[in-house]
Length: 328
Image 1 (cartoon, rainbow, N blue to C red):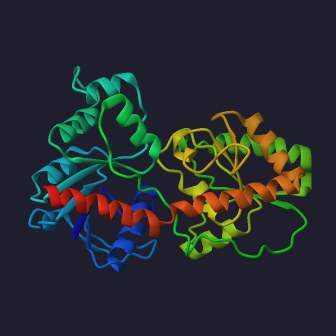
Image 2 (image 1 turned 60 degrees about the vertical axis):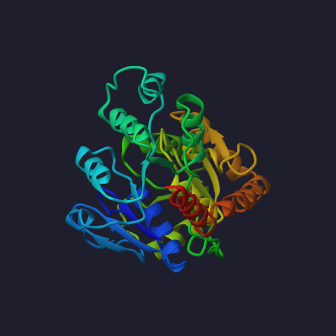
């Protein structure tokens, strides 16, 4: 197939990672993949086998399938609609569900949010709807009556995998440190203040935000973590926790849709409410003080996250597109 992606940027963002990793699997399988975005520049922060091109080239292209991760920008939605692709799809990434949104998507009233209006138009025009985790596809089916394609959130297990940890005296607790509000790092910092007050030098806290790590360095950073902590308030698919889990860390994360596919409380992770620094600190302390629990959680997490290898996820999405193409 000739497959195109339409996206606002190829910068270092989770949705870009998912798109590139899936495209790499597709390219190895023989599909022709192009990433279209406003300036057309290359992907520079992780290996990419896909071609990149600007929006002027998209206007002349005729892919079999064109997938928009468009951040609900009117100009990008217009470019998607205008293209001659046989199959068009839009991706819903980390939206905040509500009954008002559901009603708007069902066409039962005006869409007060421009993004809802574009989503509704995409549904009415028969575009395929995609999302990166199953909570989003389940919500669409239950509340809107729309069957979305298979979720495409995943992890590159060839890169993010366990490795021997260096000996150290302190337990290493790691986090992303991403300062964006929805990432919840303020909760993580507050929790770690409580943990360090309790454990002192027996715990070491490290973050990777702002360190400009390349992908190999990021994997090594996560491989050296005993515990990984994440405070997301909302999201589509939680790359930081998925990648840390794949690297063998025991994880503490928030109970949101973005982690639900792989973080099962008391089994693959310790899962706590969002914005609850005390509960987060208590979970970290449990893992710090119980070596057996920490090892069991890490091992179970590794088993669970292996189900989301991009080598499994990407072919499933390709089959979905091929099936729609056959009936177009």
